Structure formats: structure tokens, C-alpha cells
Length: 70
Image 1 (cartoon, rainbow, N blue to C red):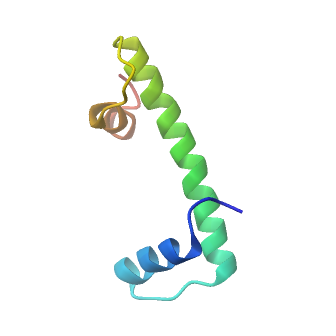
Image 2 (image 1 turned 120 degrees about the horizontal axis):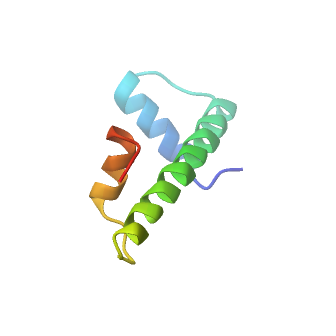
Image 3 (image 1 turned 45 degrees about the vertical axis):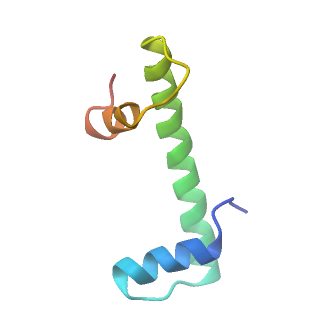
């Protein structure tokens, strides 16, 4: 099971799409989001290290989303 709670996924889906989601759907979406977060955070850490920083910034994350590069 993923670390993101079903309740958090339910709130997200309900807020943005005004529909309910099953437990299985919430679990699967949580797993997918965590997998993507691992990829993005890995990229952000590489960017921070390449800029001689020990801290990831918002820019490191946005660089992945926008350009997929530092």
C-alpha cells in the first residue's frame, strides 16, 4: 500500500472532479503518484547536487516539469 492516504486521494478527486473514487482506485492512484514523485525528486536531487547544494528548491522541481533538465 502507498503512503498517501485514501482519504487524501478521495479529497483531491472530489475537490477537483466532483466524483467519488473506490478504495481500489484511490490505492492505485496513490501508488502512481508516489512512483512519479520518486522520479521527480530524484531529478531534483541531481539538480541540487549539480549546483553544489544539499537542499532541493522549488526551481529544481519546476525544472523537471518544464524542461526535464537543470
